[in-house]
Length: 402
Ligand SMILES: *Cc1c(COP(=O)(O)O)cnc(C)c1O
Picture 1 (cartoon, rainbow, N blue to C red):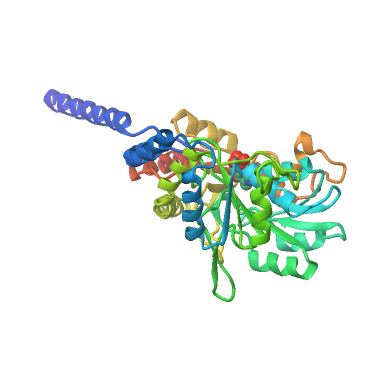
Picture 2: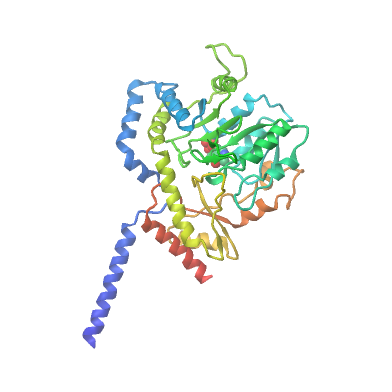
């Protein structure tokens, strides 16, 4: 008996040791694991960056042109205009369209602040509309209702990695003669499938499309970066001038511009990473499938709905919680060293800077509800099954206990 107890005790001890070892062995879980991603392409990146340093062509060097051309080819778009970041991409787009103070620009109440920020900065009037409850994307019916004689443009945001309903948005824009500026900052590489079967990449559908190469975005550089896409050569010419101080011929300034350039070093990083973008999307989708499978029939969690007219590149994996304390879930996960984030906790119309007498509580019920209930789990290209199992088990543990 005693021997048996010792045996059981030892066995338990052994198991505990194995558990501790596993816990030690598992890579730290991060919202985005840029370090592990870099490790796999380190030699290529280092060589590419070193090449720029050796050339000393830090601004508008060959790398910028090469990356621009590679991205044009990847997206099947006539013009890519690199710039300093995604926010600038949105701003120079609105400048290129000659939008004037007082012009109304319709966008979503459930997005990152940059979308509305540039509208306000240019003294245009942001007109917010609600989103669809299943895709989190701008609701075309709400757009139509918000149109006035002052409306000039629509800015759909392809939130979390899948496209808004561009068939419907195109139709509205055509009917009312409005520009479309896509905020594709979270959806580079996603593909929209039109009702007639044709396909276009996110950001190449509207008059202009904007992306960000912020490090955590699906195609991220090692600093700030961004770009505008367009099939309109005239607009492209204007944009190239605007991002370069309104200059076409050196020291002749035809329009008021800005200084918004993509560094050659960032372009060198991006040109390497662009080759892997489709593989990166596959890794993200695989992680999303794992999460989906685990949570699909859970009454307390709603998995992200995949819109039939768009592929999803899962910039974020965002669940809608039901009848559980979201803050406690986030805290519980944190105690297990699992980061989880709320994108976005405050709808745009509740932000202090955008406190606008036109809007009040209850105006955008879907956004308001989502902001209280969404939670995003770690999502990146380097998640392995061990990490995914650990994350999902802990989410389920919390739910079963609460
Ligand atoms: C990241 C992001 C931006 C801004 O991009 P930056 O490069 O950080 O300026 C704009 N809109 C959306 C939806 C974003 O996610």
